[in-house]
Image (tube, rainbow, N blue to C red; front, side):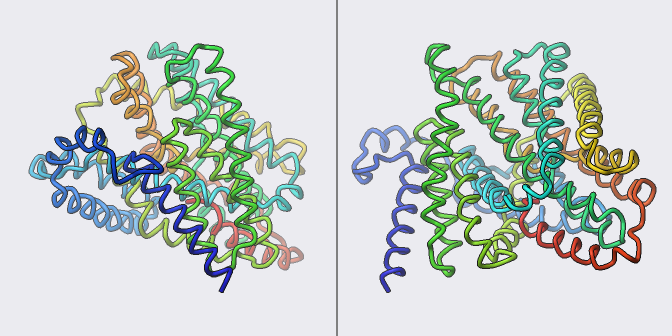
Length: 471
């Protein structure tokens, strides 16, 4: 009874922090905010809440439907979800559909929190120790090189500032487990390269964590809050350290929560931490805190239960609600007026340069790992698809440039970042899935009969990883 009461108390505190952060209310006196009420009175009167709610529901349902159709066509479901949003936004006879910017931002950030949680829960420290250098090299080296190459290419081709280029680079550098993981599980079940598949799946989560961390760091520097250059330089690493400390503190507390209360407290604490840090203008600290808290908590939970029920529950929540809503809203943000043939063609050139660099470095990263040249080539090709992180973070810079008064140069650069992120999903997700499916029988050897028991164990490990890695 004492544990149950404490769980409810902490859940109430987290929920209160979340509500105060979402509605930008004073922490200690939320019911008396005359300035806030006066400022937003006219804004609230303009929003048609009924039409907005129906639009969000319509986007969700159509995204789910087109996602299923994409799966039947052996394409990633997220591709159909993205197309659903684009079609709904750009069809002339559906001009009455509207989603307020605040609503879209909150819903997408909520989906991003789920991505962070699943990424943190999927990082198994023991498994990473076993795979040692190959997993870490595969996760970090291609991501870093692609980000740098993309930033330079964007600077030369589009003329955007180098810091904006790095922001774009780390956004595009995140691989998509939504495409990679199901494909890896499928080829492992067919008996091809189970050891290779296990390495790719394990590295995918670490790659996303690394890309998100560096993106958040670049975002803090690019959109500095009027501070001097030195304060901005000092503040960025402090946010990283602060986020890790906060996440470790929250995660350590979650380690000792009753199993029945783990999921509600995990979600509520993550949402409160993320949106609370956003209210304090330390966004990168919030993202890191969510990742670290899930990782620290899962370290103890995994000793009691494998696979974690929290991972399975988050997977269902993601697939049924957050994934279709996220990709549908991203597609709904894209109007054809934002795009031009010049932007599309030059954007594809930047993407091609980045993917080529990434593929080459991924091939080199898994050298001295006991793999043949064909297996290393397959790993490199499997590192192509992009989707989930791009969908979650693509509009962040554009929203900030429009609402923060940063000027036309920032908005133009942010538009390029958003457009290239959407292009990366539309191109690399289906192409990457097809490449994995086609090249697996060619580049990977069929597992031998003597390895059947090992293969079965690997297949079970892959299925466990599928329930942990964010799609």
